[in-house]
Structure formats: C-alpha cells, structure tokens
Length: 275
Image 1 (spheres, rainbow, N blue to C red):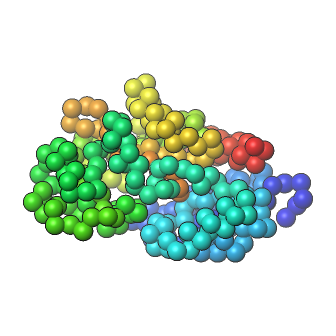
Image 2 (image 1 turned 180 degrees about the vertical axis):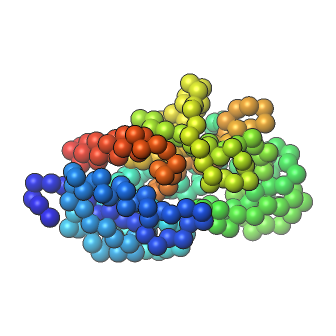
Image 3 (image 1 turned 90 degrees about the vertical axis):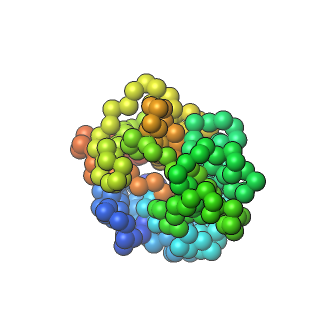
C-alpha cells in the first residue's frame, strides 16, 4: 500500500449464495473502480474485526445476512466503536442496520409504511388481510419469513417477531442513494419474480417518498436502498430501509448509470474520510 492514498478494507462474502443473483460480480466491479483512487484489500466479514486496525476505513458491502454471524458482527461493531475505526456505512444507521424496530417506529409515527406490530395486543391495529407476514426482527433476505392466517397469530411467541398484513401490491420498486443523492431506481413488474428487475423512471412524488426515509435515517454518508411496494390504491408503502449492506443490482442498469454510481461512491468515500 502507498502512503499518500487512503487504505480501505472492503468487507464482502464473495461466496454468498444469493438466490438468482451473483453478489460477487457487483463487488468485483466496484472494487475495480475503487482501486483507481484507494489502496484496497478485500476480506470476509468474519475477518474484519481482526484486520481493520491497519486501514483508514472499513467499507461494508455484500457481507450477507448478519443473522448468520450475529455474535461476530456485534464484536466487530464493538471493536470498531472502541477503536474509533471509520466504518462505511456509519454504524449509527436507524434502518436495517439496527434491526426491524424502525418499522414499528415508523408505523407509530404515521409514515407511509406497511403497518407493523410486534405484540398480540396490537394486532387489532393492523388492516384486515387474508394472510399476514411473520418475520424475525433481525431477519434479512426473506430468512424466516412465513405467512399465516389471522387466527394463528395470537399463538406466536412474540419478542423477536414482526407481523404485517400481506399487501396485494402491484409491484415492488427500489430507490438507490449515495449519501442523500438519488442515483437510480429499479422495479419488479411481476410480483412473483421480485429479483427480475428493470429500470424505473420515478415521478417527483416517488422521489419525495424515498427522500423522506433517507432524511429520517440521518446518515451523512453511505449507500442506502429504499424498498417500497405500490399499493392497490396507487400509493407507495415502505417495505425496507436497507442501510447496512444493500445489494445494488448494478447489472440491471446501463453502463453510464453504473459508472455514475461508482463516481458518486468515490466522492462519498473521500468526503467521509475527510470529515
């Protein structure tokens, strides 16, 4: 590594078996671009805590669901905080980085989010639906997701579970940001094929919706993905605010958009390191 260029530790699980996607291709593309501006080393998420002291910052990218290595991830966070290590995205994110509690907080605050409950005494506040989605608060990538009728909800062991009505949405759409700057949007026209994505041209109202959650999260620097669904009546509802390691589906956008995203990431990292 050279002394005059920032040294980055890029955390990724290149062998993560994502369904219908190749996370490793995305990280290979991004690291190839970042090497033009930074000295870079890649490591598995289980090795990050031991290696990070030799770098100016740690960039967490496609590191896989934390549910599979919660103890090691918590130790990484604790050590990074104790040492004052810069982590990108910063560790104070309020979205998926902190679990799914934000879905409850946003529901209570009246934000346009799929209504969410985590206690049997709050189930009556959910809209009526044929079935309800039940998922772990610390879940990701649909791990642990199941659908149940209302009469089976009261018997669940609450504490680490969330319940939401299953929305008969028209399609899902994701908005991708670097810092607070919108980069592109993708959507899945067929709800049954959620990872068959196509470019989406958002309206001004769509962007206002997405930016509302970016502002709520208060991250000055970082990559964020706002996932939403188009409800039957036409409005958008938040599905997920991914601020830990959002997959970017860069293979689904034109090359100029990919390059513009990479340039934005370089600029964000430089500003993050200078802050």
